[in-house]
Image 1 (cartoon, rainbow, N blue to C red):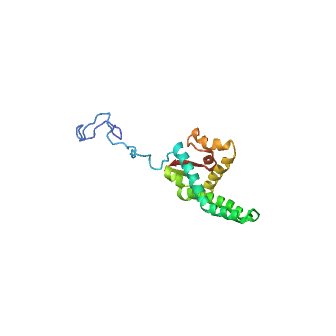
Image 2 (cartoon, one colour):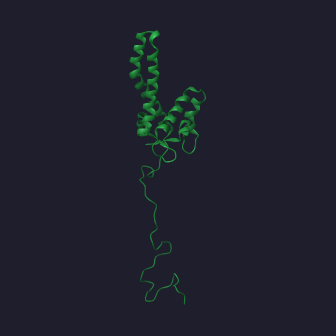
Image 3 (cartoon, rainbow, N blue to C red):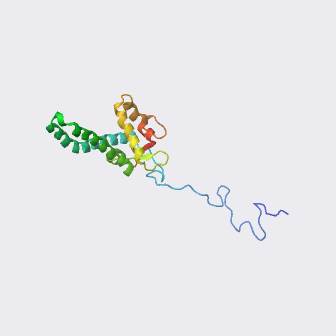
Length: 188
């Protein structure tokens, strides 16, 4: 006699109808099901790439907001430079350039680092995330991203290639400034 009963055998004192019988297509034990996710959105922890239209709208709004913030201080400083005359305008003009760089750094990289988005991106429902993890972007990564974008504006071919790159890039639809920094634009 075998040490263990065969899977289909009935033990002593048991009848076939004692446990009931189920058709063969239904398993005796429930199988582990897949988790159920809400119909309205992606699974938790999954980031969805933002569409090109919302990204472009966010960038246009960001440039408008940045220039508006820049001119709040630059306009009075420019008027002061004009009143002083051209021979005494060295330091104030340097202040304008410094303010341009400071306002750029405060608006773009700092906002992306601190909040994951700028005001324009918030309005358009876009967030900047790290490619590897989908998490927050650090300051230097955000700074490199925006610096490449700023430099690409003045280089003739790059100013066209940078924003269009996301149209054919796979799988994250990254622009070149995203590739340089290892970031991607995702839905908020």
